Image (cartoon, rainbow, N blue to C red; front, side, top):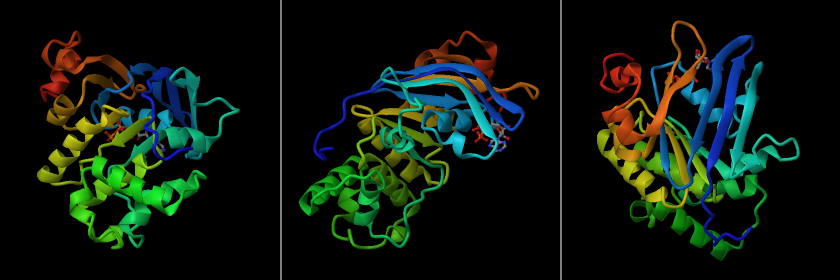
Amino acid sequence: MTLTMPPTLASLDARSISAWFGARKVLDRVSLVMPAGTVTALIGPSGCGKSTFLRILNRMHELVPGASLAGEVLLSGQDVYDPGRKLTDARKQIGMVFQKPNPFPAMSIYDNVVAGLKLTGVRARRSEKDDLVRECLTKAGLWPEVKDRLRQPGGALSGGQQQRLCIARSLAVRPKVLLMDEPCSALDPTSTRRIEETIAELAHEVTIVIVTHNMQQAARVSQQCAFFLAEQGTPGLIVEAGPTTTIFDSPTDSRTSDYVHGRFG
Ligand SMILES: Nc1ncnc2c1ncn2[C@@H]1O[C@H](COP(=O)(O)OP(=O)(O)OP(=O)(O)O)[C@@H](O)[C@H]1O
């Protein structure tokens, strides 16, 4: 792998995804196309399966003991669950940023950014790593704040900076897709806006899927929205998906309208 080539844009296509934890079905035949170079927001009340769906997209769901799934996930037409495909390959191409910033706290800012390279078996020269660290921290909107203290521990940064460091770390392995599970829920409004700006900038080169409970955020950052719902103990499904403006201004289902306008959930 070359460290300097930007990745080509890729779409993600989830087809008829069902998911179980043990015998309990939590998603029922969910299909969604997440187009290349766009931001898709997954919205819906707590417990309707948004995070489970997100974790299925990069093969994290299968790590939970007793968890199972059905359906297909295609990354630019190729099956992410192809038995001939390595798990690390799927993870490299489809990165994840979590709710709580999780940098390696004792590791330097620099080493945090390049940490993923070793895990994915990529060897790089020092100068290549230097360039990569600068590029990824710049893309994550953190470079000006940390360029003079790259050797300080990642744990010494503020929460918002730590989250941007995690974004930089994800970008360093050149993912085609970045999954974000409520990436701002632990952050203050200023840090939140900063992350939202970063998402908008990244969307030109990485396909982004974000779970958010914040309707203003979904409206600000996404071009497409999918509204998930699990009614009365039934498995979660997508009630409606489409352009964000349509989901907010003229949805076809009254439940979508009620949710996005804060009447439940
Ligand atoms: N590890 C697990 N073991 C068993 N059940 C789980 C596990 N994780 C999630 N669930 C269940 O699966 C269902 C979907 O959960 P999920 O976290 O995907 O929903 P969500 O829409 O992301 O919720 P939230 O918005 O609160 O994060 C819930 O009923 C939840 O209790």
